[in-house]
Image (cartoon, rainbow, N blue to C red):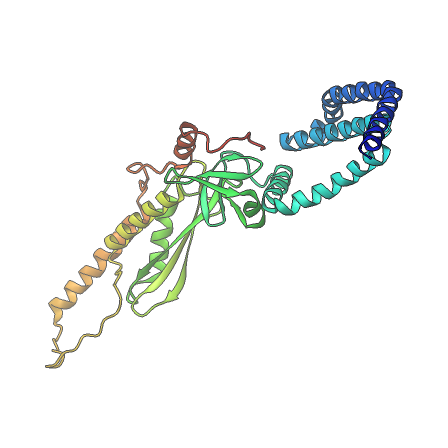
Length: 345
């Protein structure tokens, strides 16, 4: 019985060896074809991708398309090799299994695939560029690097913030660099006894004399709210954020307007408080001298207002209003690379 099994095994080996020798020329040709297709996959893919430079400038798109073309060429060479070797059914199984494997890998690495697809869409749509100041997912910073996985921002504290591209693509992106002109605003309160029109005129004059505030669109001061103890004025102004910091311009404008209001005698009271007089309120009769003093005070106040409105030299020379964006860009250049990978923008 053992002799018969050994003989059968030897016969099977001999038969397979004979088939191998018969198929050897075709197998050799298949190997040669596979090597040729493998070697040509790179040059052919680069040649076919060249026209893309006229359609799109994204390096990531070019790399992905080139690798897909190379993969198709290599798979076709493998298919020819298996056909020449007499393994047609195996070749079909491999090609069909490639698609199934792709689905399995896609589900297993869903987050990676999502980030990669988002990076493709970002490289095509280009909602921002490198060194732009953007806000995304609650973070504000300069765009340092965009790879196939994540977008890296350098915030205004000098920290690197890496945000997955899927979050970048799905969230609202606010680009502060796309339009250099940006509107700033703040609220300042004046007393109910203060002349509102004069306060608006004084504040507008102060803003118009600041070189960092644009003339077009012109600044505005509007009544925003009637609070418990103040009439709240909302000050609007536009500035070029490529040159100036909006926060610094707001700070200087508030300081200048407060100084102008104080010089004009425009009250800026704090929150209302209840005052109790247990002995009653004393009554004082105003005589003629008091009237003259009051008239003199009113005249001086009107003169101060006139001087402030006509004052020609309200400038921003005593403060540095330059934008901080360039400082952050310099810090980003000095910092180490945030992660491995090439920029795709």
